[in-house]
Image (cartoon, rainbow, N blue to C red; front, side):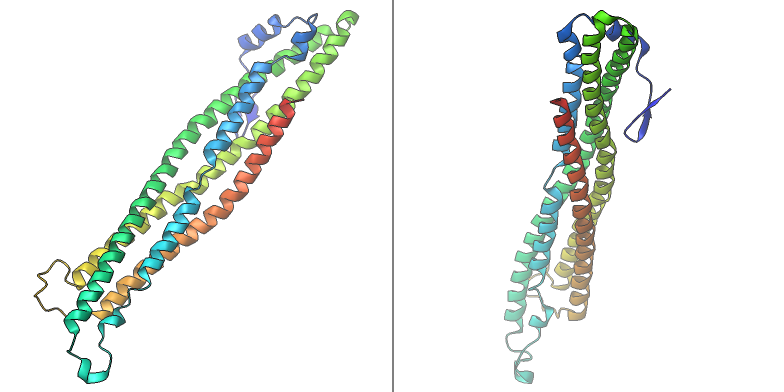
Length: 290
């Protein structure tokens, strides 16, 4: 009969492995009964700790901060600054100077936003790599739990052998206590496995959202560069389309806001999942100390 490990039904412990463990346990050996399954227990606890360590990351928080900074770099770029102040007398005077100053501000903000986009992309890629690492560690932890299952099954079988043997009763009781400790470790470890999948599901849309933000920044920069004639000879007279500049800026703001919302939700859900994982890991460690 299969035994559930996390959210996935696991195969029963290998019969030959269970038999080997059972045959190696001498119920006349007090130390062997008290320390039964120690190596398997340590591997399970270590596997749980590695999962928790890999799940923890500041990339989601830092991505939110980067987006906030990106919005801050965009805010001061107001196309209204291209419109002369002071009525008709200022309509033509200083037009080139205003445009030059505005281009300079845009150039600086554009480089900053490009840097933010590069940092965002790097964090999105790290989260994607982390998902792959979690797959490996999840499978490793599951394997360790299955090995612990073999010890539990072998230990229970050994207790059956000791029934009615008065001279083995004391050590059988020690083994029974030890099996209860191992079962507690197993139970705490199993609680963590579906939480890892929960974190991966939370992270999955983040990389895509980050890509959307970086693409939006690139589109905005190209759009404004074209509208402001950044690639043209500076002697060429242009009249920037304020409405078009405003629309492109608004579209970027909306795109960054949408990604911010995704990251805010991910941060909240991730914090909850990490808290549950930390609780499971602490319970696993506590159970391992008996």
